[in-house]
Length: 439
Image (cartoon, rainbow, N blue to C red):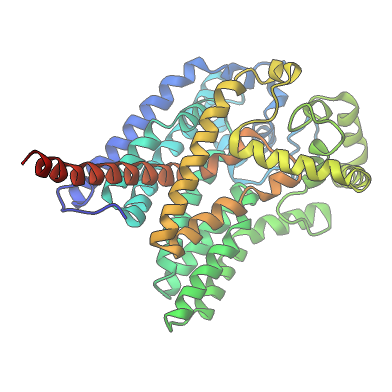
């Protein structure tokens, strides 16, 4: 661990910490807001592009009093989008109008604020796990982090809210490992449920964090079963209204969202030019949209699932190779340097070195953390490696890894600070040797 010399290091004193956190957030917010004018956010409100913004389409249905409608060009009820972010967008639409310039700008400002607020748990997590110097690096690192700036200013999606939730879940998870207080565990369950209603993919890491915390309590001789049950009940109570709504509307149990069949088909249909096949999506293909409207949402999703599974069953080696390519893409940004591909993704050659470097720095920090504290490394590593697995199996998107960026920033800063400390130690050891030789 990087040595902690004295409270003189920024972040140790509470008053200093508060001002420092405020500075991080304000700088991060200013940078993100400054990028908004360079984004073509008018595409989200233009008549020719309005239906391409799925979150906005659901929000529009909510404002019109139709409930959670389809994110596609349809009047159907839907369980494709989890409820939290469409409700946020709907609230903005109520105030500023549906798909107006002001409402779209407000949504982007909301995303920028949420992304900037992540500086707070990032700093606190880094200080707790790596010391104040790394916390300082991580706070500034997130404020100036390119992905944080670009995606919050340009990508109006639930990604940023999920990112903030995951940071706080990690922070609370460490508290769970030390305390069986039922209120703390219930709070974790409530936040986990809210995060799941924001983006259900987060639920894959919740059992891992709860199991690790329960194991730590049991190992310390403290009660763990009752706290674990309370957290699980709080989680279940939080997501239950959405599950009940889906069951009442569709007359069957739906595990959070019903779009897995389409997601699986989008990445497993024989096309490998890109990591997904946007041209086969109902938002971009007239025939697919017609099938969706005529068959109904559940029947359509079942149909796409059968198509994808049938293709996978007859192309198993292709599927295994594609899963490996998808994993490589998510961690390095590399898919292909094919000219046809680069025509659709022209910034990939610049992005690949950055994404790969970030991954290498993060993994280096994870290895160093393992040497110092295997439990902390297990917690970080478990979240890092569990969260993206489902995207290896269906299809990835660039924004899928963004909730993990804070972890990579913290671990990367830990690696850099550790490396700097090692260099300083080597330099200090060389000085006496030089002095001795001269004497």
